[in-house]
Image (cartoon, rainbow, N blue to C red; front, side, top):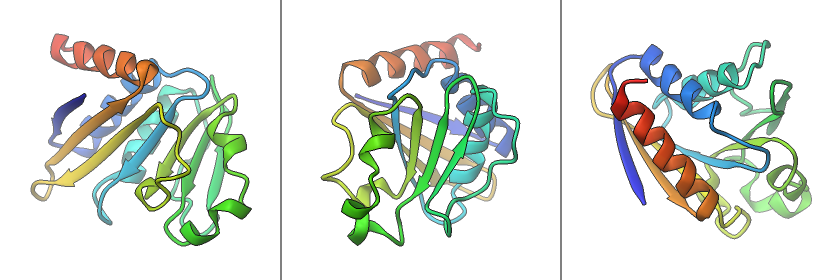
Length: 156
């Protein structure tokens, strides 16, 4: 199932992600896709705020994995530079752990991502306009997709 949302500011992107975070549970997996500058870090900052993370959230490009404490642990990963070494990183412990995983460039490791997942494609439609295409696969993710769609349509 696929849902589409349009955001006209960084704040709108973060507010959506914050609402989504309130629906998440341990073990939820979000694959985050988008070109450089599409808003992946902006999205993750909103998600972190929604999970109650108090620290500054920035891109894990050079550290691969950043962990943040909140209502649920947030594991923010960027696998762009390590896709060919993913077997050595022990990511399954994060993917199936007690927190929420956000993995940038997860499309580079298709054989490693959980079957039940949410894929968020952030697409630039203009200088300040982003299209968010949320693809959900699996029972749990489909439930979250329906709930966030209802929240957005209801204006909550």
